Length: 96
Image (cartoon, rainbow, N blue to C red; front, side, top):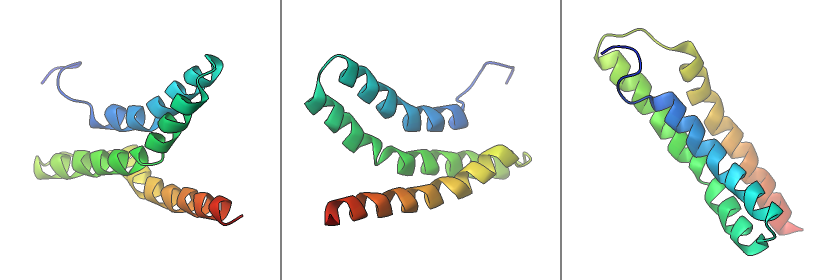
């Protein structure tokens, strides 16, 4: 495939992480707090889907005999760790 063709897994993963936060900010500026809260709730789960996309990208590349994209590999390792800390902060907030 030439440049610009095909599905970019890493970009899709980052969009999954960033879109809910951007939509939330847009809704807050428009004064729609309830809709922004729903976007935030969705945004709590999108890192899991992004992690799955990153790992799928790596596994498909390995099966094709391609080299490892180290930025994607590091992100696939760090994103779940960040999710654990995020989950811990959400649970700590609920306990207060």
